[in-house]
Length: 218
Ligand SMILES: CC(C)(COP(=O)(O)OP(=O)(O)OC[C@H]1O[C@@H](n2cnc3c(N)ncnc32)[C@H](O)[C@@H]1OP(=O)(O)O)[C@@H](O)C(=O)NCCC(=O)NCCS
Image (tube, rainbow, N blue to C red):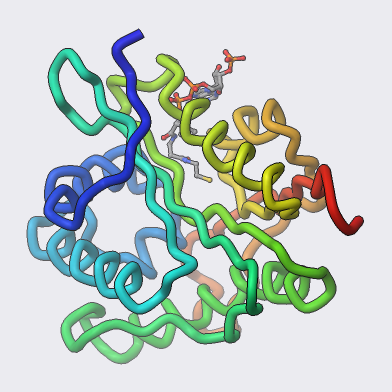
């Protein structure tokens, strides 16, 4: 199979950021809100800069890519946080000026983000390190079902097993099968809860999934 796992360089983000939004297909209210305008050049550029900023300031942030060696195209990317020495601070999402079209959209994004992170933060508070969280797992629609997602999951699962980490994922329906195949267990179906003034927005439903550590502490 001509698919190869690797690590993207900073210069490569421009080439795959549009693909990640295409893979999500506008179906995730969370992505549409926290990473807005993913289908415009301006929105993609804003997300590229935010991804690179977070990668630079946070050494726990690990990106992997899958390249199709026949075309040299990056067809999939995943991003994990690997917490070994220290638990992460419980910080609300932010972005440079212009990320959101106005203060209401920013406030909505921050409320949705808090609702999304609530289970993750609880899990992190209640469990010992090492811990790993999968934040992004996307494969270009025309390259799905070729094993790229599996390669990126294998990377994460092998690392988790080698350091004795428990892993968590807030999964979409599309991702769920891949994660179950990799040892994740469904904990809960949940709908992100936002304040009353945002209740008319589309619902974001997710699966909270955990892969128990396979070595080290229980
Ligand atoms: C989830 C995703 C990353 C899987 O990538 P992929 O490269 O197609 O995965 P693989 O080819 O390695 O397939 C892994 C398994 O998932 C299944 N699968 C792949 N794509 C699927 C889809 N869209 N819907 C349901 N199942 C899917 C495959 O059947 C396969 O199982 P099998 O080996 O038993 O046949 C990809 O479908 C995607 O990008 N989806 C949209 C974005 C998304 O929702 N990501 C998850 C965020 S939590």
